[in-house]
Length: 292
Length: 285
Image (cartoon, rainbow over all chains, first blue to last red; front, side, top):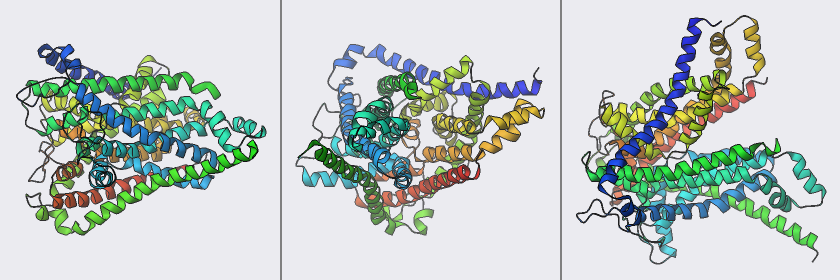
């Protein structure tokens, strides 16, 4: 039998847990209800197929395409930067480096992840963009390339740390068997360890993509605010997140169509990251017990 | 050349590539901090810390920004810590097998991946409009508290998980109730880990800009906030504002403010790492 005091405490604790569910419900309800009224005025077909996004001009177009392309362009550049470097670091730290080196370097790299994102934006604008302009002709003062690269540097620790954890969790016997067959550490890493830890590594990559899609300050500062449909990384682009920032900084009336566009943009962003997060959760749950 | 030799060479080559990549990451950190120090260090003086923002770059200071950050940190901590720790305790100690706990768990994994700007959209509608808090400190703190809740809960659970079951069993054997066991035995034992999580999550909240922009926090606030209902700005907002201006003098101000922000961030992270190491060393069960 439980004392009544114990029950009250348990109830209070459970309520705190419920807050997280309320948060999710809140996000979904807010995004859906505000975008619902948006889609009463703008057809979903136009939203998805129109190639212009100009809600803040007199000639209004509501095609999400330019923002989506901007988002995926910067994300692709970020992943192209972070994946090879991050994965190599992970393999090096887990398969080659000695324990002490690992112990010092890992926290140092994780420090990169603790830096506020607005600082990365400053870095992209004042260091990386001038550098790119000096080696590549035609790079604008706001461009997708610089923002993407810096975002990549930002998520290197995410990929390296999570992938390293996955590699580190593998049983020793796996590597010993490979070494016993005469394989070099390189062969062991790429033919035995990487495939065995692939689920953890895939999870780290998916989470990195999701992080890059939702990143705001770097792109708002360095990628520009021109929603132009372009695949040229030297041009300025506007991402979904940067658009939301642009509107929020301005003086937009509540209830106006401009105000609702940030919720329409927000729900698009949310659906992408939500899907990616669920895939990563599913991969993790499904494959994690393989070697335990 | 035999394949054996070739394999050894590839192996060696990759080793250097690995060192190179690791160094690249660290080098970026160095370039990064070096560049900011060069730009901003000359600008930092007492006036910079105590001046109000101004139209003129050389007269601008970060008084409103750092007081806003201090307010936000304190309020966010007051809201998030009790909720996060309580939810962590519930999930780890009470609801291991029930459906609510399973749901909350999936949910937390999901929330941790929601972009911070989405929390801003939630905060704008729920705290800003429905609760009528506008763009006040309180609205900002609620938004950031909701944002760091998943991190806090996960950290609390990890810390509780590390406490061995023998401690719980010994306490029950002495006739303690569940809550007595948690309050007097488990929480003190897990305290270091929980504190580490609290500091790291607050450091995260301090660096956030996007959600605060969305709820309508102002870039230009000419006064120091006096109550939780006041409008506010924070250091990252002030930096963003300065960085977005074309004049070089404002960029310098931005660099100087970044030095202050990074200093606080690194100190918080340093304390967290120190606590974690100390806590791990001292207690061996």
